[in-house]
Length: 290
Image (cartoon, rainbow, N blue to C red):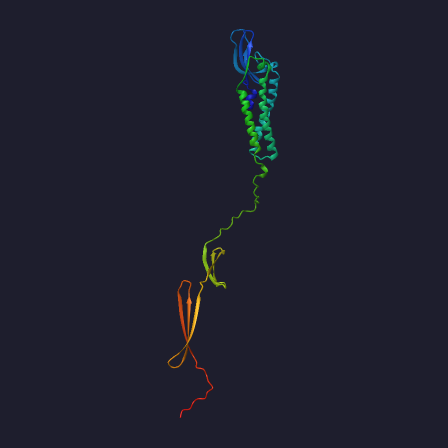
């Protein structure tokens, strides 16, 4: 767009008054080229419609270029040159990274390109072809200049956020040519056997701890050990003991012990123990019978 706006002759249309035949005629004007036409004294003006240089125009001369057009010439020529540099630099960065400071400098340059391309619209302030003319209207190249400025602004914003080449992924560690890369040997993780051990411990606080250890032995010699602890509360037992002394028919003395256990669920168990008691020894002499 920058090149078209620079070298095409359709930047704006100037309408002039021909004093020879007292008629108006229009032609397109650019910075470096102008639409070719002939001034004639006949009623019809001959316009070819092609863009030719100011130096070879049939009716206009390069001396007709005023200050507004001259200013537009300078900035558009500079933009055309540096746009080629920008395109070449963009193609180069596709293959090789550039540091962050150069990326920011390129973004600022693109921003300036957009501003300078907008300044080319000052050509519409030309005295001879706009201010002193019958009419002056923007043509397609002027609209392309506006669109090109917007694209330069977008390019500046996009370039500013290009990541730095220095924060890219680190290079892999080179492997010596004479050292072959040996892949790791495959490991056999098949399970050979599983060992299980349980240990029950009764604690003094009325609880019981069950420790379960499961050991998985694999073919490569590795072991996976899993420990599980389970603590339960022992049921509370109420105990009642009743002792009773009885005398049998043979005169022997028997000690009867009755033990009753009451469980929390309401059940009970009774255990009876009978133990014979020896007769007490005395110092009285035996009695003789006569």
